[in-house]
Length: 78
Image (cartoon, rainbow, N blue to C red):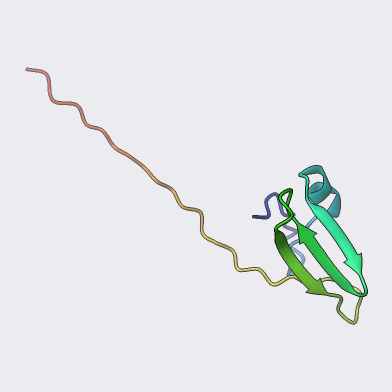
């Protein structure tokens, strides 16, 4: 899961900070035009080829947050 992704309204895309990934314990490797991001357990999070304009564009599907709620009602006092 990628968290704390920068959102800039004027851009059409969000930006992921490589420094932030590093601080969170992720490994970032760029070699032969391919960017790989692994989590602290070495699971591959992303593998992206460099585009012609030298950007690494990662197309992500954003999941909707799940909110679980519970409600408790007390018995009326007599």
